[in-house]
Image 1 (tube, rainbow, N blue to C red):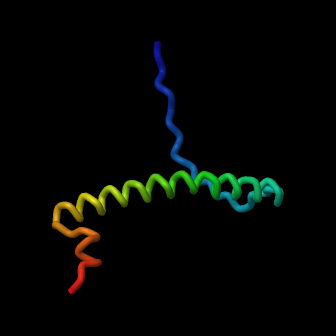
Image 2: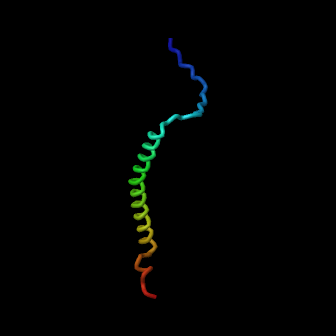
Image 3: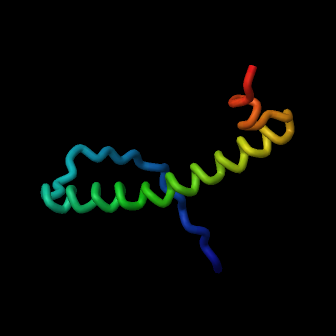
Amino acid sequence: MTTEPILAPSQRIVISDIDIPFWRLVGILIKWALAAIPAAIVVTIIMMVAMGMLGMLFGMSWLMMFRPT
C-alpha cells in the first residue's frame, strides 16, 4: 500500500536581522564593484553596435555632424 505525502500549507518566513561583520561586507561590495566593470564594458559594446546599426539604417553618420555649412 502506497501513501502519498501530505503537503503542508506554505509558511511565510521573515528575515529580521542579518549579522554580517563589517570587513566581510566590505569584501562583498568590492567584489560587486569589480564584477560591474566587465558588465559595463559588455553593455557599452552592445549599445555601440546597436547605435551603429541604427545609424546605418537611417543614413546618419559622424561626417554629417562635422560637415561645413
